[in-house]
Image (cartoon, rainbow, N blue to C red; front, side):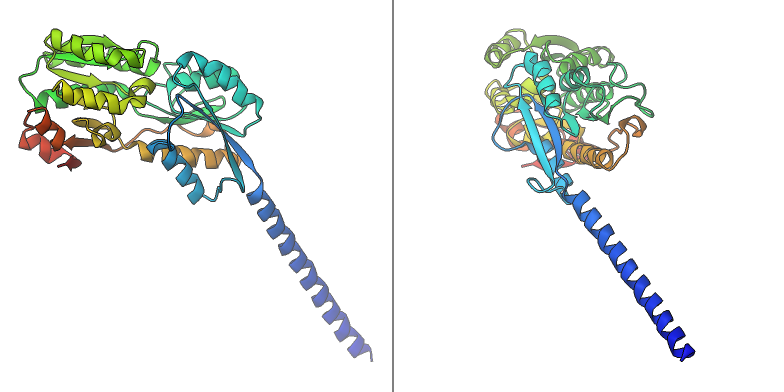
Length: 337
């Protein structure tokens, strides 16, 4: 009898611990599901309203979706648009902060600075072509410190490379206009970074300042009057927002031009050189994911692109009456024919 009792006791213990383990795993599963389904809020500050998200933001949201963030289920986006007015950024940044978002995203130096001024606690992830240390956003690339980190495009190197490619494609050009916005820090930096490389290449640079969409037509007329034989179109929010207009004017005035991103070339621009911005935004999404899972921006080193692409539109080159040398075409990552 004692043996039977002892056997039942052992069975009871086994059943008991089996039940405890089962309950533990159920609890863990429920906790994980609850954590996964918790709604997080991502704040976005953008230059203007537009149809669709644009290539960068589309890539950003797709990467977050791939990481398990489903809009309406466990993630919500709070977006504020400056509607084409840079001076609205600060008020909009403070409005975003007041909505208690979990992380903020900036795609330009102006946006990043506005967000930095608005909060010292909410994490900020940037994607931009400026030096974040020089502008006081972070302490260093390796150890950002504070609540900010992200992805930078190392613009100083790229400004000189674009001039070099334009000169290589069209050796006879000597007078280059740089289209930039004095109100946009990202393009101010690109204009300054072009000075030294231009002298090294024997090019005369001419400043064409644009701070309103109304100025593009007159800027191109001015370029023709000055005898300009090539144009560098800086990135910046304004130029990007009016990329189709600029591409149309390039063809109308038959001016060889180089841009900072492939999107310009896809809609009729002639040549571009720069990093794959979609990849940059995907990396920004990875930053956001790490932060939402507990990582601190201060400990996440700022990343830089390792691959750059040159895209050429031969249809546009033919339309404006220029020939791109075979040696330059051979180096292009993509040629639109």
